[in-house]
Amino acid sequence: MAMEKDVEKSTDSSMHHEETISYQVPPAEQEESARLNLQTILAFVSLCGQFNAYILTLLIPATTLSYINADLGPDPNYTWITVSWQLGASILISVAGRLADIFGRRYFMLLGSFLGVIGCVVGATGQSINQMIVSGVIFGIASGFQEMSYACIQEILPNKYRMHGVGIFDCSLIIANFSPLISYAFIANVSITWRGAYWYMFSLHSCFFILLFFCYNPPDFSMKHRHDGKTKLELLGELDYVGVFLFTAAATLLLVGINFGGRQYEWKSPAVIAPIVVGFACAVALGFWETKMDLKYPLLPPKLFKKVRGFVMVIVVCFVGGMLYYSMTVLWPRQSATLFVPADKPIMRGIYANIFPLGTLTAGIIVVTVCSRIGHEKWQLVGFMIVQTALIGSMASVGVNDKAQAIATVFLASCMISPPQLISFTMLSLGLDDQTDIGIAVGLAGTFRLLGGAIATAIYSAILTQTFNDSIVGKVRNAISQTGFPQSSEAALLAATRLNTPAFYATVPGMNAAVRAAAELAYKLAYVDAFRLVFLVAIAFGVAATVAAFFTVSTDVRTKTNKRAVVLRNEVNAKEVDAEGNQV
Image (cartoon, rainbow, N blue to C red; front, side, top):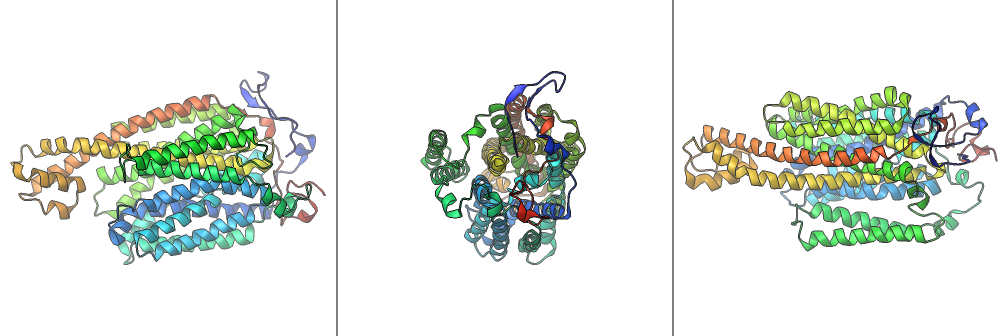
């Protein structure tokens, strides 16, 4: 997009009464039609399919994880089935976004979609935990390409409809958001149990791949480089290979160390400290490399990070938003299953698990109907962050008898968590000097959102486990103090209560119905203490995001024109124009 300048400044009070990103719009852009043609609509629908495929690989493995471990394990490494997804996705999102900015997006998106299909087959036929981890790795790599959809939809839509687009995009997740419930239905009613959920995912991924193949035709390499005349070999020689290596090493080591901590190893273990320290060192080296070297196509363009309020602060909001969003997808199913739904009701557990994802549907509607109309994105971010922080903090007061409060709060919180993420994506894309950087800009937002989720999940899991272990002994002793349970069997009862299954309770000498009921209540009360502390800690993250949101800068209304960043390859006369639609 042609831009004469894009700097952060305070505009005239008669215009916006707040700081915005200033943008001079050529008159020709104002005259361009904002009507969407059939090719654009079909491309948008195909990208919605890829986003659903991406979310399916997040939700279904997470929902079926314990059942997979029970069937193919037990294996202490089973959590890496989902951790590997975080690793692959967070790393590939930015790298794939940058490569697609340079070479074109179609074949990268098709590769991600095809890998998703392969991951489904590998998972559905898995005979060991290691094979399921391989499936998770493939899903992670595929998701790194598929989350590019956020950038893809924005560049094919008129600028003024970008926020509408990301809102509708989120609404389309109604397909994926029912997957936890569908997974539990397979587990409860079909002989192949969790494998049925993977085959269901395979069928959807296959359909989405076909839709993408026929309907998504973004600018190809020749359209992107008609003016500079560069060949693929020339561009391959100008890629930032050192930056890619340092970025991959930093993200991988940091995530591995974080996920080792409190799980496979203690936080003070060298196996945890070493990868975190080396990963941090790689991140520092990456910063020096990107800023000091004269790179033609830097992986992390320094010009983006120089815009502190227009870019860096928005990324911080995405990072902390990820800490709240992705961790809630883990915390709420566990909390609801522990406190409110017995293990012999898997369908009901699926319904409860679906409350948080379905709130994102409402969030998408809010973005389309409200957020896209009122502008003042900075203050929208601040407002949403304040409300979601208050709601998540209020979850600290939920006890074993507060089912209605928990359901209402989780649903409202999910309605508040997604809009800041979607608003941030449009703020980043419309604030770019050069729209050819949209892949890396939105990709970095995705990377930091996933990193935030991974870090928060590790922190929350460690707090949850430690607090539960600290509380359970006292809770059990108080619960059985009036039951006459023999003290000699107390150790066995404590061991059984930690696992909280009928089979383990049956092995405890002196067990009866009253003692078991008391132990089950003690188990819940110990988790009430654990979840309370987790949600109180989450308040600190929400406050940090609110402060960052306050220092962002709204998008100038003059950027919201009819202009599109690119034209599709299969549009009329596409062969006669470059990627931006300019005649050649």
